[in-house]
Amino acid sequence: MARTAMFEGLVYDEKDRLVEAGWVGPDACYILDDDGFLRHIDAVEIDRQVLQFFKNQVMAHKEMAIRAMLQMMGKDDIFTKTALEYQIAHMDENVDQMIPPQARELLRSMGFRIIVDVQGNLIDIETPDITDIDGLPGLDGFGEM
Image 1 (spheres, one colour):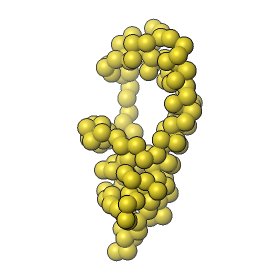
Image 2: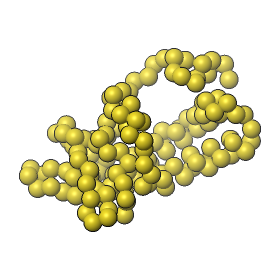
Image 3: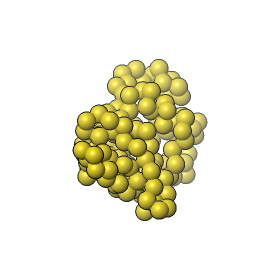
Image 4: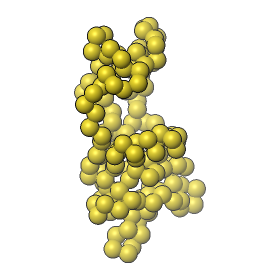
């Protein structure tokens, strides 16, 4: 059971309504309105699906993602590369981590949204369309690596 809802403020239902986060005892949950019946879905169930989605996306472009992260960190050694590979391989296990409120607000302002059904199944993840990767901070000259 989760103590925090990682993606609070970013989860929407199929009717385009923001899903609130709350608790059942000590366990964090997302509260979905099913025609007046409030379903409390354990936050770990939704968060794990979102993290698995991210993991699949990163694994599809693993080498490029690692190169970008190494460049942003200003490092290029085997130990940092190995640590990043490990983190990517296990990213879906990082449920119950807190995303800083500033990061969630940035994601929200960029149009990032997680869509779930009333049972808590992931329907879609809307991500911002970034077309100019060289314009992102820390990725100057990325294509030249």
